[in-house]
Structure formats: C-alpha cells, structure tokens
Image 1 (cartoon, helix red, strand yellow):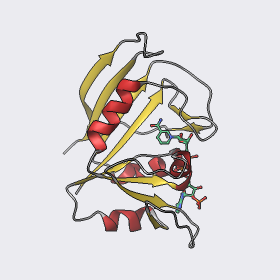
Image 2 (cartoon, protein in one colour; image 1 turned 180 degrees about the horizontal axis):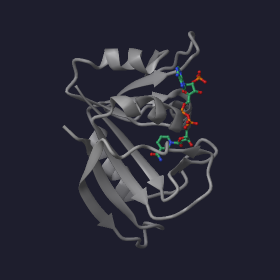
Image 3 (spheres, protein in one colour; image 1 turned 90 degrees about the vertical axis):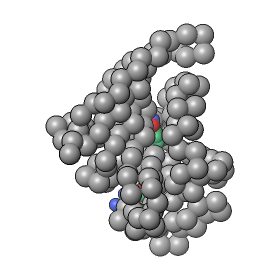
Length: 163
Ligand SMILES: NC(=O)c1ccc[n+]([C@@H]2O[C@H](COP(=O)([O-])OP(=O)(O)OC[C@H]3O[C@@H](n4cnc5c(N)ncnc54)[C@H](OP(=O)(O)O)[C@@H]3O)[C@@H](O)[C@H]2O)c1
C-alpha cells in the first residue's frame, strides 16, 4: 500500500482557520478530487466535522478520534492512525487528508506528499508540521498563476520518499 498525504498550505504552512479552509481555489479542489476519487481518505475528527456531516462523493472515509463512541453516518471510525492503516493495508493507495494533528502523526509513514503551496502568508489556527524534507525529493513542480477565479497563485508539488 502506498500512503500519500494531500494538503494545501500557505508559505507559512497554514492550512486552516476556525475549522475551515482559508482560501477558495477551484483548480486545487479539482486537483484534490482527481487524486482522491475512488480512494480511501483518512482524516481527523475535526476535519470530518468541517465537512458538515456530508462525506465527499465516491470515497471511503476513515475518521480518527479518541472518542470510543464516535460514530457518524458515511464514515468508519477508529481510535488511532495505526488502526486506520490496518484497514487500508490491502488497498493500492490511501490518502491522509488532514488536519494538522493527523498530518503530524502520519509523517513517518508517508511515501508521497502531494502539496499545494499557496503563495500567501495568512493567519490561521492549524498549521502543517515543520517537516523534515531530507528523506524526500521533489519530483513535480507545476505553477498555477492567480486569476479571476483564484485569489492567490500556487504551486503543485509532489515529494517522494527517497529509496
Ligand atoms: N489545507 C488543507 O489541505 C487542509 C486539509 C485538512 C484540514 N484542513 C484544516 O485543518 C483544520 C483541522 O485540523 P486540526 O489539526 O485542528 O484537526 P484534525 O487533525 O482534523 O482532527 C483532530 C482530532 O483528531 C483526533 N486525534 C488527534 N490525534 C489523535 C490520536 N493520537 N489518536 C486518536 N485520535 C486523535 C482527535 O479527535 P477527538 O477530539 O474526537 O478525540 C482530535 O481532536 C481545519 O481548519 C481544516 O479546515 C486543511
């Protein structure tokens, strides 16, 4: 199983504010959909809450919570990242989709990071960890300019764990 993380972060690694995203970037949402459609997505309970109880179409959702009785329609719930990984061990690939707490837990297990670096420095409440890039190499870098539909420019980056 290949474990990937997918995240959009600002120049200061901010990912969210008030349990929501800070930007609306339609082409990044398409990028997220293209990568995760038909796959399993693993998330923290707060990121699940940010979906408003409506799972994303055509994706298996696994939610990590410390609450033994956490249960929500449209997702499977587990109490640790390791339990989530055990549920996907026979899948070809699975995605860690946040938020900050779950990215932090998952970093040692990740094979690939799909990062959208949003070229803005904004305030927020949730930040991607200050991760060590040394074990990874950047294999893809594609710039997207700001335009009428995108307030900020951004760059799609793929980082693969070095073999
Ligand atoms: N920009 C992006 O790409 C992106 C992606 C995803 C999310 N976000 C943003 O990130 C923010 C949410 O991130 P967050 O860090 O606050 O929350 P989170 O990581 O989504 O969820 C945190 C919750 O996960 C559970 N948890 C954490 N560590 C655990 C452990 N070791 N064992 C078991 N359960 C554990 C706990 O749930 P319980 O409290 O239920 O125990 C905890 O409250 C939002 O603003 C969201 O919009 C941004």
